[in-house]
Image (cartoon, rainbow, N blue to C red; front, side, top):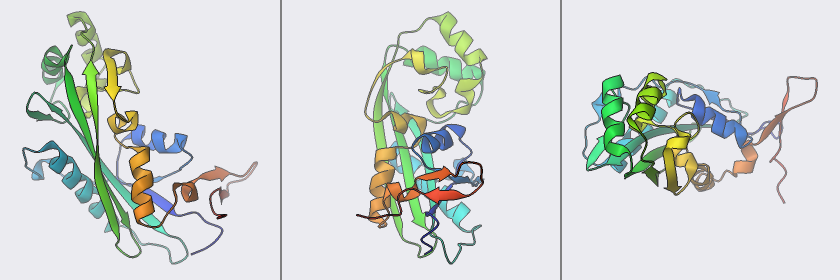
Length: 222
């Protein structure tokens, strides 16, 4: 592998929140949308569902890549679902569905599961796991629910809520990693990278002042 280039991380997701989370952690991922039909996976176990979808997304993107001989390429697929009241909740089908969910969820708790599948495109090695965080919803009013649903945000996310957007004030507290609720757990990603003999600091990058080149920050090992 080239000493001048950090490993390339490809995010198999259209989620701007996942990309922003990686960028805030010093990682600039390439983004390639998987196009996986999520309805193909049927199971009543939330952890199994989100992990299988994460696998399918990573594998779908992997088949479209041509790994460079001089640079390690890693693909990360993620998927999130909310386990609530014995049900698995993905994205709402419409505004009415989102409203009904919030009427049920307010003042109660659910568990947000995010599946992660990391594949080394060069050798096919894989590391995968599920991160889970308990979410306690605030007892919000009917008017707050109506206004939040009208914003459109709940329609685009698993469980019909966000922690890093308009929905943040409607979460009383969480137990676990907030990144899991966003859809990608950085502590878990670090552990998965280590299983593939990659340090997360190897993925840190910066743009050189006045130029377009990207320098690795974590290439010097102690």
